[in-house]
Image (cartoon, rainbow, N blue to C red; front, side, top):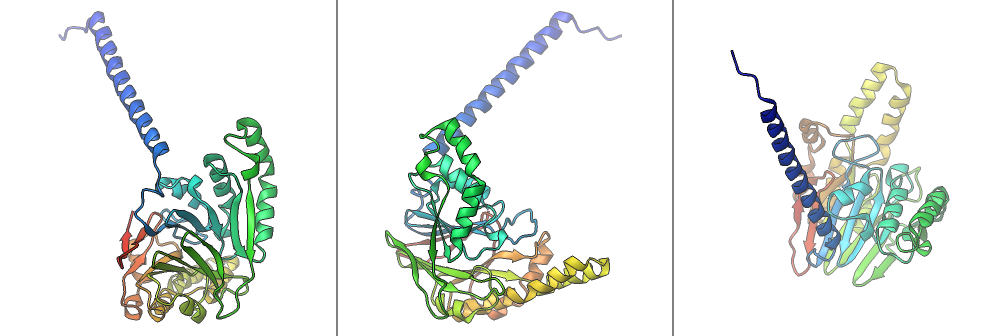
Length: 357
């Protein structure tokens, strides 16, 4: 018969376990403290080598996806951090990839579809209450962007009042709250007006094809002899191809008509008339992956990165189907981005560095 455990021994075991647990807890808390301190002391923009860098903070479209939030690109040109579109979920991806929203200086919208701007309130709030700014977040876009800025400022007014009352001017300065519209006229076909220029950074806009959505534009960003073009939402556009001539990287949206066609057939089989109509309607105002590749070839782009990828691609075989024919249309590097894909174009070099998360 086994001897019973003495009460004193049981107490000693429990005390030892508590000491070990307490020690582990203290180690974990110490590690957390050191990491938070390092994050607060870090300068994610200043630590990058001089050049043009792009974080894909939103690689997907409006449908839910585990690894592709709605459209968003963070562009760091020199020491200027800018966001191009800010769909749902994308603001949090900034911090998850080492760029707190407080570093963002300005936002550029390609058009006013909800999946390109519905994260704007979150980004503006986190940037305001988590940064060190003395002016509102500049919101660039074609005419009509004033209404977007006014709408978000109205919706977030009560939240702003709460934060100012709670934290005061140090954290939530009244002069820096909200959004400040920076509208520009929609460029005519063939025009590429400068919409922002400072510290060697040059941003030009060009019109794209997304009817009935108007205005709709893309952007070209240049810094230190390096350049990128951003399509926004568009069907295949010769105007984009002209504006993107010679860029190092073309970031182009794409919709697989084959895969969306499967969704349309499924909707028909299920008797879902709404989904059937939506999946039919969206086919004519987006570029297919092959058409985007053809545009990259026509522009002479050094690399092609797909973003705003429709539909979601939860399985790797779907990614293969999405990319069918693209290598025949364009012989440069092709990247099917996910949230966290990072592209670096260092100055003084022709290198194109693409890093998957």
